[in-house]
Image (cartoon, rainbow, N blue to C red):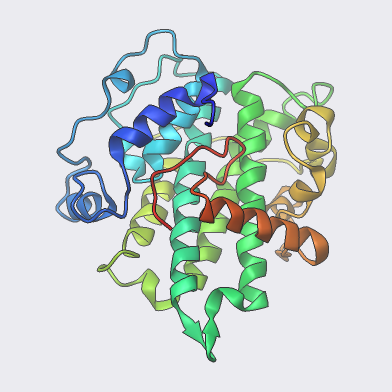
Length: 299
């Protein structure tokens, strides 16, 4: 029996309450959420768990995972939720930004599901090496964003001697990495990205809602980001304790930290390990982030 750790207990409650997002009869499934979005409603009829409407003494990391559970279905579902955190400050920003990892989790899951069901040249599309590289890269990007936001939520700076570097990585790098990963997945979705019907239709909604939440125009503009010491940041002991540095340095989004233009994909043994980890989690119904929470989604 899996023991639910304290930071994920609230998220587990939310997942259980919302159920399988692919259930076409569920009032909190993708079909109902997409229908609500199409008619201009931001939420569905089913109320959220009572624990989400109470601020109480819920720690920031618990809010992070709970909001990810909502973002996995729709970032707009999280709008009625007001975590008991100050509006300003690094922890609050990290919770808000880190919640988008949940939307990327669903987008990646939808893409894997799509590629497994699509056949090209007589084989499943997911078996094409180039597509596996992209999937592995998105998985690495997701883990990278999780490490950076989780450390911030825990108020742990991996590079305390470099003032402001971690905050810049969370506020500026993470949103760009998530957006880049979603864009690459949309290419893998092909024409399915534009079709507003069927079980894959939610992908476009996830991408657009996540983009609006991450780059909201009602927030004051931030100063232009400077180049980040990316390798030093992700290989610092506090970051390395959460995830193998070779996974983070293989993340395509890391190139954004140096203002370079060419997006590289993981290759070789690291790519194979990332892809194997991705499929293991998918087949076993586990989230793609560090917590590996059990999910109600059917493969």
